[in-house]
Image (cartoon, rainbow, N blue to C red; front, side, top):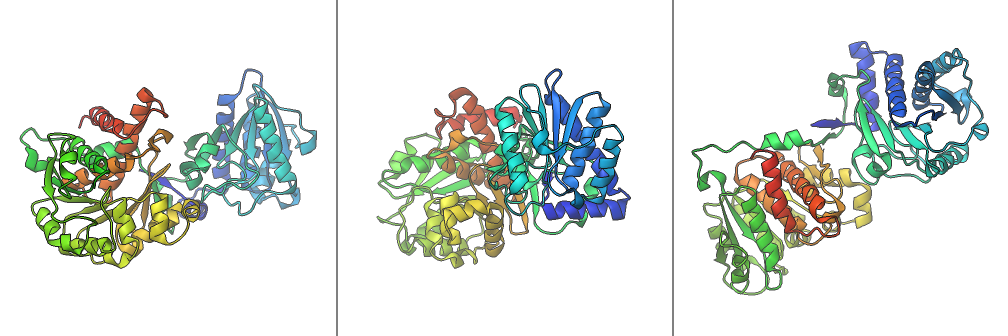
Length: 510
């Protein structure tokens, strides 16, 4: 796992590094500036010039250090200090003096030469602490950076592109769009969440001397970026003497006339993700259509007709006997009693449950039904479903993804998988996991059903939460990435992921 720090947590880590581990702030800046210079060199064209734009804060100090290292290497460098130079931090002043010792004095921003192909612009105007939209000369400078980039110059940002909010990944206007962003010490939410991640370009995390132990002093929510090694190692290799009973039995409550494909995709993805057995429980008129998708799918007819309600409780409890995980929601017929039914069912059984789609819409009417669940519960909403669960707008959800997911997880004592670009997995204990896999081709009907099946299969195999959830999300996204290489983004459909999952398990030797 890669730790992700907010702006305040980063300040706490730097303070701890200095006070507890003897790492002075000046040396942190020196290391950051050196890494920034190396990144700038890596994207420069032969004979290209480096334009370094510095603000008055420590981010500007990092830029001044970078300019000095570039000069030491014989590069052509021009530097500009934007804003009130009287507000330079102590470390920035010290590095300005060191730069001037090399014979380079900052120029007025308006007097800088134009940048174009082969040139590199180093953006060190603002750091992680930006709280409002850039104005005045700062806004003008950001606009000029955009013009230079359109002209062919490469842009390298120090820690975060100027104008981007580090904690929310939301850009102010104007905001720098970088080709490379050098993340100092630890990655930030802006590097991992959209739309910020797209504005950062190639994110390169560099060690500036903080050390992992400095994060022990930070407060607040714990954010982590899931890496492929984490997901792969979460899945144990299969023993030669295992059998179908070793890998669990998933009950899928899904489907209705016209929506039998949803139930089939959940069942098939669970089978393709290692579940030993999968049974679908649905209304009798839908069951044959579900089972026709594959001979491996078993079925149980739920007596009655119409929406699921309290009259289905005993049949569902009986269906769950001997099962190891429950997936409920995709395509179910929902009515006024469906939420209460789900609450009663979860309160009477201890198997881990994944709620998706119409199951989420049903419980959104009264979230109290989830608080009595005996077993662990995973909610897998997309932003629209999360808006209904949270009682806000989809726009609000997208603007506060981490906070919304964590709030719901802690308030309901469950695991929340907030789907979308950079899917989030929040656990009740206060940790949030950011998933880096997946692509825009997966924005098509049924991909969420596939994810529910993968998650249910891993829970049935005994993988605990939240590990089962973030492993399922990573594998699901990776399956989409691998299939997009064959189908393209526009041609990708949900059932392609069933093939992609096989590629993932082969890649991981599982």
